[in-house]
Amino acid sequence: MRKNQNIPNLGIGIGLRIPHYEDIFSKKPSIDWFEIISENFMIDEGLPLINLERILEHYPVVQHGVNLAIGSPDPLDFDYLKKLKKLAQKTKTPWISDHLCWGRLPGAHFHDLLPLPYTKEVIDYVAERARIVQDFLEVPFALENLSSYVTYTSDQMPEWDFYTAIVEKADIFMMLDVNNIYVSSQNHGFDPKHYYQNLPLDRVLQIHLAGHKRCDGYILDTHDNYVCDEVWEIYGEVYPLTGGVSTLLEWDDNFLSFQDTWDEALKAKAFQKALV
Image (cartoon, rainbow, N blue to C red; front, side, top):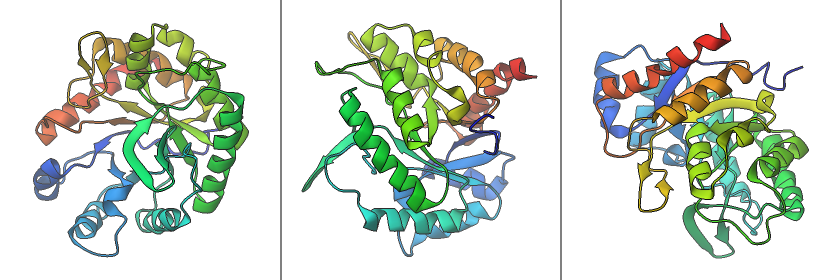
């Protein structure tokens, strides 16, 4: 039995971003779904919630977070989780995702997605916290792989084994970012095939696509560029192996028009044909 067999495939979507609101509200384009950054709407009232209500009248919405920092050493923040769950009840999101990272210490929040050491001790720690989060939220919970730029001397295994061990031990899901696989493979010198061929792809419930920027000696995950051919190739190989899951294009800076962004996302259809 595939772990993701009861997870709906919503089709192809893009991230809901303010520069596109005018086109969305005036033209009501035929797009499958939107992903929201949960923290932007975890409030009691105000214009963000008014706009979200307008979106929910016409489109499915999925929540994706950036502040959970599941691997941080401080206790889980249940005030945060209560707000997240309240928003989930409003959006009826079919799942919630966040990042496999740390970003907080007691009394300090770094507002960054920082990689974790790939050790057995961290696996046990993060898996238990992720299990608690999924049980509390009462919807499927997924962790996303990072794009990374550093490694730890304490690492005991490659990232794909670390990622796999956490989701299997916690019995949660993967939100697989194929651009992040490529970025990290270039920054750390591994074959991206080694990454996705060693994942339990039946635990993937959503795929992220994005663009990046080549810098001096490394690649930076910027979400402000077209998806490159190498990332599309990875997507074309991974997508059929998941059984077919929801696909999202992230574009977060140097924005294109809504239509151009949607056209870039729709390129995914050509790479989904292998599943037919």
